[in-house]
Amino acid sequence: MGTELEHLIIDDRERGVFRVNRHVFLNQEILEQERRAIFSRCWLYAGHESELSKPGDYLTRRVGGRPLLLTRDADNTLRVFLNVCTHRGNLVCREKKGNARSFTCFYHAWAFSANGDLIGLPGEGSYTEAFDRKSMGLTPVPRFESYRGLLFVCFDPNAVDLATYLGEAARDQIDFIIDSGGTDGVEIVQGAQSYSMKANWKLLVENSIDGYHGLPTHQRFFRNYITDMGMEPVVRSVTMTNTEGISLGNGHAVTEKPKHLTALSGKEAEALAAQRAEIERKFGKERAHQIADFDRNVFIFPNLILISTWRTLRTFYPASTDFIEVDAWGLMPVGESPELRQKRFENFISFLGPAGFGTPDDVVALENCQRAFAAVNEQPWSDISRGMHREKPTHTDELQMRAFWRRWLAVMQGRSGPTNCSDRPEQTAQAEPLAMR
Ligand code: FES
Ligand SMILES: [Fe+2]
Image (cartoon, rainbow, N blue to C red; front, side):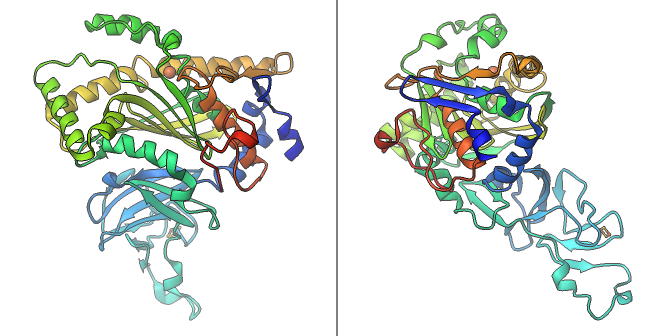
């Protein structure tokens, strides 16, 4: 597949042309290769520590196509297992989340503890001497590590450690998002948004870091809704030059722009100012400015997106070449006032999710792309060249997407070692953090 894949991306740094062949959104073999090369080998976000705060807390989730069971055991240790019974393969836990001392399989009632041990089974005496209960515990995922409360898993036992995979530049950006919560950081709030769309998963990667589409696609929100709420409409995102699109190495990327003024007043405005002051006390003026005065979309390859404006974290997986299942959560400051928390909820749901003013626009845009790709033979190329020769690409340029696609190609081709995800030719790309596997 190596050479064929190469022809699917045109990356002409000299002329400033970057194109992606739309077959990558349609082809079944490519999806299968993605399952092997990406979803079985990259570090994937599985959950957040705050979702498992007490011993016995658990949650189940599909990650990289596999059913997982995340637990905090009686000794307070976080663990991640395949949610698959070692007897005959049924799902061990059928609930989304809860607190339990043990998990009893629905099928033949084998029971497992939160640390994975098989602790009981009906009629154990009927097995032979060869039956070794100790070896029949739940299967842990090959790799499980966390970074500042974000829990990641990897199905490749030989993968580099998570910190190396993320790299310093992406870790910094995650730090900004987490430290914007103030002294106690951030937590996942109760509830989640789960939805799906008839589009290829990589279209949602592009969309999640696409500053160019914001105003045209979400006119109703940025021009009408915002005005109805008594705020100035947003009108100049595309021409803003004090914004940035940055490749962070490893395919990770960020878009950044100075924060909009908020329309809060009274108690909520005071609470927000107090939160800002607390960040400055803790981190100093300069770092506090970086943490608190920018809106950023942080993309972690291959499928995690943290969006500071809406205080959300989103991940998604392909069910097929043209169907994505999306999960999104609110990631909000710990211990903030109920009034401010309420405002954040309102802010979050007014834009995001199936009933928001924003998400349905994106769903329409991506589903219609997927529909129109039926004409791939006549019109095969998507253009992602915006800002390619700009010294400092802006958030409405497309460097962040090119970074994704460059890493995507390298991983799909099984190339190990660094990938130059920047717009600069190899020899001059030292400024970019190097990617590794
Ligand atoms: S499949 Fe789980 S007890 Fe039989
Ligand atoms: Fe959007």
